[in-house]
Structure formats: C-alpha cells, structure tokens
Image (cartoon, rainbow, N blue to C red; front, side, top):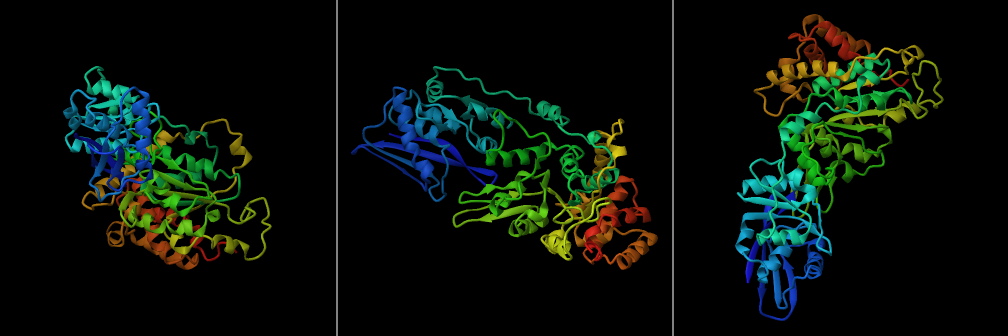
Length: 514
C-alpha cells in the first residue's frame, strides 16, 4: 500500500515541503530509503523500527521503500523520523484513516522508545505549512510555541509517537497551541539585564555610543584594560530602537534554523547581542558547513556583533566579514546548494591600544618597544578599519566619578533620542530601497544628504590637513556628522556637528601610535 505524508526541509532561512512516500509491497523483507538522504536520515529506519516495535505496533514483513521527494534535493537531519514512522504504520494498515495524513505537515525526531525530540527550524517550517495550505502542523511539544507564532495555522504539540497515532485514529483530542504573539512580544521588549544608569562617568563614550545607535554605525572602542569597554558595549542594545514585528520574525527564523532558540520560546523581542570568543573560526563567524548553517554574523542580524580584543582574532576571520559588512548578507555556496543568510548587524569592537595595554594612559607608562604599537594596530587591515565609522578612545574612570552616588542617565532616556533620530532617517530614506539609516548611505546619496554648511566644510578641510586624516575618513565623518545633526533635529549639518564627528576618527591620524 502506498501512503504519502508531508514534512519540510530547511535551506538557509527558508523551508520547502518534502513529500514522504511510503510503499509496502510484496517481496523479501528489506527496507530502503531513497531521495538523497544523508546518514542521519538513513539511520532513521533504525530509530523508527525500535519506536514502532517498543510500543506494540508492527513493522512490515515485506519490502518497504521510502522516497523523499523531490529526490534531487539533499535531505539531512533527524526531523523526518515522525513522518516516516506514521507513514509506515499507515502503509501497513495500522491507522484507521490514512487519508487524514494529507492534511498535516509532521516533523519530529524519535527516541528508541517513541519519545519525540525537538527539531531545528520550526518557525520557517510553520510559515511554509501555512503557505502550502495544510490544515495543521504537528511538531514536538518543545517547538509548538515557536511554530504557534504563525497565525491561521493550527499547531499541535506531540510528546510521544503513540499520541500521534491516537490523534490520527480520533482516540485522542489535542488542542492546538494558542499564543498571543503580539502581547508577549511587546511585554518582553523593555526587559533588559543592563542599563546605562549603572555606568559611572564615561559621558563622552556614552555620547559616542548614542551616535552609533542613532545612525546604525560600526564603532571601535580603544583603551586600556579595565576602562569599561566591554561594559559599555553590552549596554548598547538597550538604547537601540525596539524591533518591529517584521524584524523580530527575521531574527527568530535565523535562531530557529540554528537551533539557538530556548525551549518553548516565541518571537525574539530584543535585538540580539552576540559576543564570540577571539578563537572563533571563519565558518563559525560567517556560517557554512557541509549543511550550511548561519554563523555569528547572521545570529546578530538586526542587532549587535561585539568583537572583544579585536587584534587577537585571526586575520582570516576578520577579513571574511568585509563583504557581509557592505552587502548585509552572506552567500554560502556548496556543490549541491547555495543559500543566503541575512547579516545586517552593527559591528562593535574593542581593543587595547598596544600589547601591554597602557599606550596613551594618563597615569601608567607604556612598556612596549618602539614600533610595537603600530605593529599591533596593523593586525586590523585598512579595508576592515575603513568600514568602522567611529574610533572612540576610552579612558579610565577617575575615582571621583566611581564614588559618585547619583545614578547616571538611564538607557530609556537615551533610547528615546535614538528613536527620534531614526524616525528622521526613515522619512529621509523612504524612497531609497535597502537604506534605513545613515550608516547605509551610498556614495551617490552621500553628496545629497551629507553636505555641511560652508563653515563646517572649511573645518573639515582644515582638520584633514592639520590632523593628517586619511582620505577614507572623509566619507565616514560626513555620515557621522549627519547622525549628530539628526540627534539635534537639525536639517542642516552645522560646524559643531562636523567638529564632533572629527573627534571620532582617532586611528586615521598619522600621528596616532607614535
């Protein structure tokens, strides 16, 4: 008897429907699984057989062929177990009404005793199930809240193979999961672990991070150990504009595909903050593998990627970020598949000014040999540095600020100014597809929206000559000036806006580093 069940395979951040054809036919006992399965899919037959027999059901004693269609697409992972198992039982006449299977997409990994384990990519699978017109989606209980975020699709959580069998035989009623996605999403948006009110002093650095957040710029914090670089960077996400529902869905899909969502999670409500260790590999950072998976830059989509101790990262790891920083996506090609992962993130990095950490320190003396500072800074290539808009020197906090009892300005106040500045940019770029903030301005648009007044232009010219600023600093200063003007709600870029932007290009000065 031939029976069809339906599952889904995830490629990139999208899912495609897979038809699982199960045919029990006369012949010697032999089980086949075809349709470009990988080893994990092939091994499903052993898991399925054990789960079926352990729970008192029978495997066919004849020839069994399972085809995963379309057969020219490679299938990977263990999430087809549940669909294969129920298909075998239906083809072997152990379900009352096999025709019910056509109404459901079924996904789940089986234990040997029939327990169902969670899967990766439940959210994109649910989106595909709704698009394909299925009447319901059956997933492990741990994934039902994640999949339940998709409206107009009944999602049923299954904990054991026998539950699915009884559900299909009308012997068990399982209520679809009900989630008020919007209410949970908006309730969680203001729940932050950190706040800028906890930071004593460092007002100039807070201002720089406010500009960074307002314009979506990349920034480099450079200063001695213990100055507060990491502490400040961790609080950046608390002043970024809240995620929209669309952005939250994009971000959640990526984390779902990577298997990074916690159990029983729904939409990601806050902008992600990813902080990989400096020993990370190229593939782990940008994504890839034999079955392409998103890397850290994609997990930071719509959020912040923080690279602490930047010169300690392998040069090859840093260089692979150059293209994603410009294109805001990463393309991964393999022999049989090519996928795109979104990677629109803000890069925030931190580093010591030299190996000993005390170059330019107001109190401690640098012990590095001549030329070592330049050598240390040269670990970061010019093209990568060119993509970082703000270079911010972080100095140690004086004792008078540390001992101050009064709380500093909270993140909520700073965030309000950032949101107002972003609103100005949204209105400015509403006719420019793919541009949402000042950091994304291209060369053509730069001349239109980032032209300072005459006094500001003269100041920039004088700064370029006097401070020996490099040519690559010119465009970056103009973009940052535009953001400073937006924070001041000024339509024109004034002299003081240009002056402040110039102070954030320290590493472009030829004199920096001795």
